[in-house]
Image 1: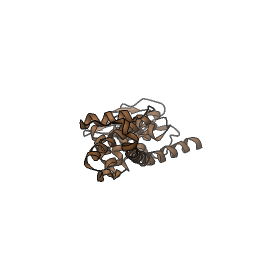
Image 2 (image 1 turned 120 degrees about the vertical axis):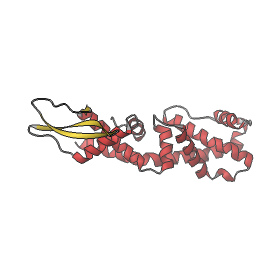
Image 3 (image 1 turned 90 degrees about the vertical axis):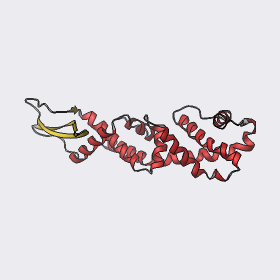
Image 4 (image 1 turned 135 degrees about the vertical axis):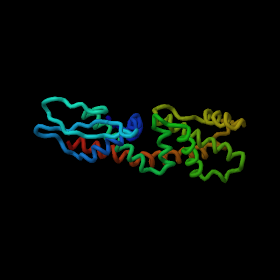
Length: 223
């Protein structure tokens, strides 16, 4: 895996089968940094064992008859790729569940409606906007989801939502008109508050992943 940023690493790690990645990461951790020498080298196979994928290492002679093994033999580059993916997944797993779901919504290629639902609840509950008058609170609730969608577009390199698009987004869910001409007076401070919450949780989600990425980059540079 080419390490560019924490966001890219989160996305790329989850392209892999989680079971396969974690199996290879566990096997590589067991092997440590041993490198082959002399007449033998270590190869890793990904095998099915009682319905789950496991990684097993074998010592083979560098010359002579090739042995047949069950499962798929992994090249050194493939093992390295899956090891990095496993380390990224472990960092993601260290996050609180709700923050992890927010990160999945923003960066995972396998994001689901559940990820968005939990991320929405996280941002809304943290916003402190439930004390607003009922009519305004209902719109602010859906603005929290719009803020998540806007942030996702922004981190993908596209323009975030403007006032008009936020108003349309909320109208489609409430059936009540929201006039963008009153944005500065009625809604801009609420939008800024929600956007700041999303920014903060995004930073929280990326923090452990960024630490792994930075550590791996430092090792590459030192090698």
